[in-house]
Length: 112
Length: 215
Image (cartoon, rainbow over all chains, first blue to last red; front, side):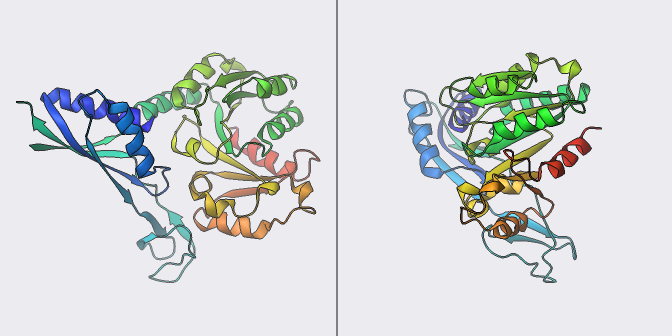
C-alpha cells in the first residue's frame, strides 16, 4: 500500500511537470514499519513499465522525540534503552508524535 | 534537472478516509476502538465475553478483519451483537476505506461502541489509521514478555494494553512487571489491565475503563 501510494504520488507530480522522475526522497518516524530494502523492492516491481521505472528512492528515518514533563526539555531517544531526561534526570516523559510518512521531494528531468 | 519540494503525506488517501470515519462516528456518538495483536492472543474471546457481560449497559458492534473466513464474525454473532466481516485476502492490515464499508453495514443509530478487530499482526496495522478513538493492544502471556521491547510501535501508540490469559501464568515464564515497565517506558499513560477472558479474572477493571469511555 505504501509503495502503491508512493508510485501514484510521484507519477502525478511528474505528469504535472511533464517531466521524467529521477529520484525521490521520503522520510518517516522510527515507529513506522518501513523497511528500506522491502519498500525499494516493492516500488521497483510496481514501477516496471511506468515512467517511474529506474527511479532512485531515498529513505530518511527521523528519530523519536520525547518531552520531559518536569522541565519541558525536548530530546531524541533510542526506543529500547532506559530513558531519563538529560536536563533534569526525570523519567516522567511524554513521547511526541512520530513523524509522518512523507514524500519530501522528487527530482525531475525535462523530457527531450 | 530540477527538484520539487513536496512534503506530501504518502498515506494521505487512507488518512482522509479515516478522518471521514471519525466524523461519522462522532456524529453518531459512537466510541471506536482499533484492536491489534498477534494471531491467537484471544481478541475474539475477549470481545465475546465483554459484549455478553456488558449486554445491558453497552451496545457494542464488531468489525472483524481477517485474511480469510468469517469464523470470528460467527463467534461474535452468537452473543447477539451485530458484526460484519472484512476479508483482506492476504493483506496484513485493515485500511480506512474497508472500515467505511463496514460501518455502513452496521445499525449505527443503535450503537454505543464499535470495536474493529484488526488482522492478527503486531506490526502493519499500527501504521494505518482507521478513524478510531483509540488503539487497544492485546498481548497473551503465552507469547512472551519481550513483545513490548520487540514491537515498540504498537505499545507506544496504544491507549490500552490488555494482558490476556493470565490463568496461564503458572505454566509459562512471563514476567508481568517487565512487560509493564517496557510498555510504559515510551507510553507513560498506557492503561494496563491483566485479564483472563476465559476465567473472567481481572475483566471488571477493563469493563470499568470501557464504560468510562462512553459519554
